[in-house]
Image (cartoon, rainbow, N blue to C red):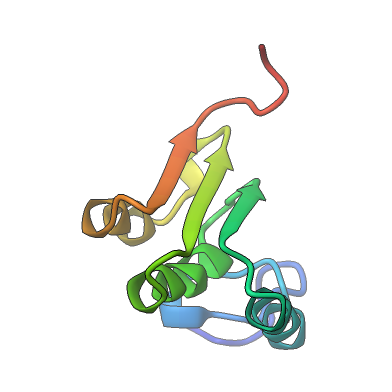
Length: 101
């Protein structure tokens, strides 16, 4: 897989999965989560799963951290990212419309 800018400005590929954030943005998100001791993270629009895969690592090492991702179209989520759900009950990705009842 190429790591050049071939996906509309997206060049960040954590674990080979496209991320809709720059590395700087992802680093700032992770810094805020760490600095403020965030215990639950909800991502509305998991998309392909780049940031999701980074946050999975936090669920693996921080006992009280929980992740919930919401994605309307599971066809776009990387299958490897979806497979991470089986490793931790504190890491969930749901296929739903967050604006529905």
